[in-house]
Every structure is written in structure tokens, then in C-alpha cells.
Image (cartoon, rainbow, N blue to C red; front, top):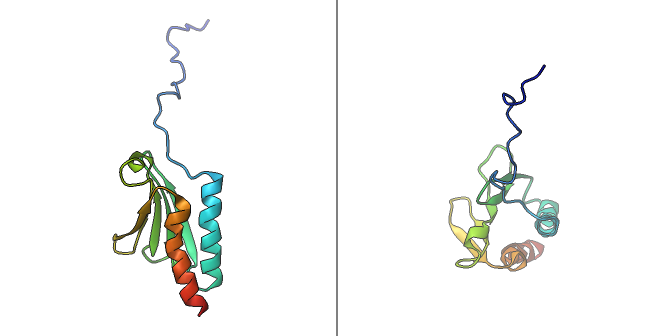
Length: 116
């Protein structure tokens, strides 16, 4: 006979910390720019990281290097500085804003330079 008082219930998932993730639309926008830069020969690899406070899309020239750029989604900063941020290789903030599409325009200028 099993004593049910000794069996611990499964932990509740409602209190578990939630991870910040990219939505499908956000990933589509990022991967469109990424694909164009790969076709231009500038980027070769990427990595995605999700944490409790932010999600990061890292862009690499080569897999063994530090990321060239990091596109960061940080919802906690949405009201103050904007939820979106692009960091350069040295950690410098290159672009910050409320809308992902506007922040990704930083790379559009690079694509135009490559085309010429």
C-alpha cells in the first residue's frame, strides 16, 4: 500500500521563471536580414540564446570568433530605452529602439554599401 502523504506533488510551473523568446515574426525579420548578409558573403553563422530577462541573436563571421553583432530583445527596457538593441563586437550600442524593423535598418545601410 502506498502512503500518498509521502509522495511530493510535481512542482507548479506557473511560478517558474519565464524565458524571453523571439516570436516567429521577429525571427522572420531577423533571418531575412541575416540571409541577405550571408548571400553578400559577410556573415556565416549565428546563435540564439534565451534567458529570463532577454533573448539574444548573435551573428558571427566565423563560428570560432566573437559575435560581430548581437540583436537583443529586452522587454524590461521597453518603456524607457526600447526593447530592441544592437551591440557591436566591442559591446558598443549601435542602435536602440522600440520597433525591431527600425533597429534592423542599421544593416540595410551596410547592404546598400555592399551593393555599390
